[in-house]
Amino acid sequence: MNRYPRYNPWIAAFLLFLPAAFPASAADVSTAPQLEALLGRVPAAFRSYNVIVEPDKDEAEWWAGAPSVARDPNGVFWLACRMRTADAPRGLRGYEIRILRSEDGIRFRKVNSIRREAVPIPGFERPALLVDPQTGRFKLYACGPWQGGPWSIIKFADVNDPSEFDPTTAKVVIAPQTKSYDRDIVPAEYKDPFIFHAHGVYHCYVIGVMRRTERIYHFRSADGERWEPVGSPYQSIMDLTGWHDFYVRPASVVPVGVGYLFFYGGSNCAWYDPVYNIATGVGFTFDLHHVTDLTPEAPLVLSTTPGAHFHTWRYSHWLWVDDELWVYAEVAKPNGAHEIRLFRLPREPLPLRAPAGNSTIHFR
Image 1 (cartoon, rainbow, N blue to C red):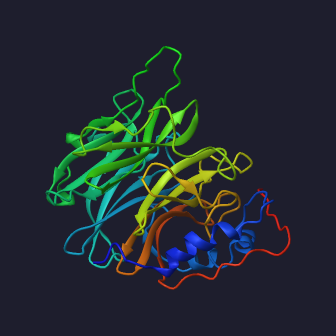
Image 2 (cartoon, rainbow, N blue to C red):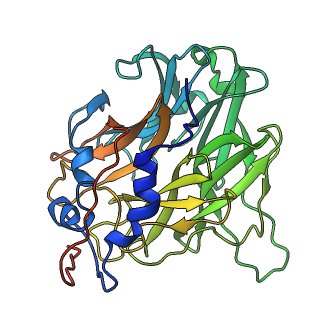
């Protein structure tokens, strides 16, 4: 299994040509056809996919999503995802963390189900599943309002097999920080972790809710249990600006030899319901903390099967499988349901083209 290819022309296309694809005066972005005009063939690469997990009802507001994928030393794929109902208050609709197993990364079967009542917790959002590189055991993190308090990052006891995760072992590992001074403005909640191991430590990127806005914060841990903020606990690592001026959220981090691609989700103030209408962009980082936005004017990808209002393509997890980039993402369907899809990006670079003249595209 080659997770760190020495050279990949697809990534070279990202790093060398993607920033140049945007006109200097680009305004705003919305629909997939317009986005394709701006980004050349990038959106076309996401029209082919496999459906991995469907919602329990194929109806509006029933969502299967927030995938987190781990591949064990034997090459087996493990997926943790959040199942969401329409029959609950918004913000508390995640009723289950479902865990699935696959030999090929395409055909999955359920092996475990952690229901919110079993923890107990009012609701879930994105989980994070990974393999401990020292012990080979599996770690599972989640998030939700803990015991009547704020949204926090929780962790279950490590197991040898993901079918063994016990909901009653949940405990808080990242909670809102204590203020240094009474007038400090600190994130009031944390949610939706992406966690991975690099350079001998664990890195966790989370949404921090700061005065009702959502930004990205970075934590680090030697053991995956005790976490500390990297840099100031008050300072997010990406700005609310450009097309993501309403929210910006962590999605995934992928090693590319000289550094890391940093995938993120975001939304715009002018979009319909920007709390849930989330698109995906990409940045680059050498040190896992300072991120250069490679898609500042427009997202990289939206749903190619949007509904009347929602073009959501979010919670993506990107990983190397041999010399391909595999992407698991939660994607909007025309009927308002969401499903988890797998996109396989080829090794060959995508020929990007800059739009002629001063083309602009517009939000709805």
